[in-house]
Length: 392
Image (tube, rainbow, N blue to C red; front, side, top):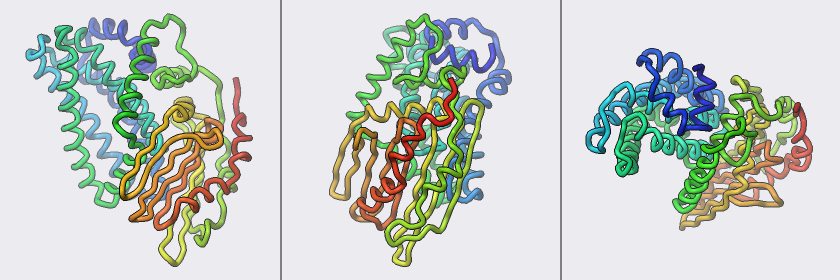
């Protein structure tokens, strides 16, 4: 079975696909070269391409080290699954454990494409939840775990994986340098939501995935189910969308934001298989230490990025002594807003036409200035382009 068919089946019909995988004969080398090494590369490549104004001297080492640790991590998780097996009424089998660790990771690896737009980390998190669900489904099939112990088995594996990830993150941060580590931490913080919101999201995706499991129809179009959306994208289902030319997006970025003048300018068009996007970004600064970045991304050419529509379903608000964060809707558009009153660091992002993402980040700037920067590009004008390049 080829990579695309396997990825599609494990995402859409995991219950039956685990039975197929259980009866397959393979080797560690075949599994790595034919599947793991290919899918694990998506996230690091997207990380490299989505680095914006971060120097290539930082982005390249970070991407390479992240990729290497991804490959190592799969093998270590497989060893943990195999080692824990007897404690949960399961059978030790290192090859089966490696197949389980690799194929359960599929949605999380594919969602690595979201690294191009860091604020979409919440959608990658949904894919990560689905990977845990796949692990849960696969344990009784591949490892013959006792049904009454599958939940506990899954939880212990996840705890071990979290510890392993923390260790790897520390090493990656040391290799990449403190500046890069800080940037990565900032990216991760953009996707933060409170625990109640995540519990609700987890419940929603479990319900959605159960409906996918019993489906007998061909792969669905992009909908509210992240897993189904990714599989549809891999198969090329749904309309073909050519991203708006990056030069057009670049022309929408203003020369000034308040007292700050534009001092950096960048525009790119990126394509990875069925994933395409165009992006324009500008940096601003003044003599008083105020700095800002303004970015416009056309995600219409990447089918999973149509999951921007799912963002509109999330409403969250939290406040501390230092600042606040909230997600909701303004004028019918999904909005994410975050501000630290002590450092005067802020972020304001708007989804336009379920296709474009407009982001403003600033240092020593008030929130009204960031909102003015986003609204100043002409959101209605941008939304008028939402059907541009669409081919059924």
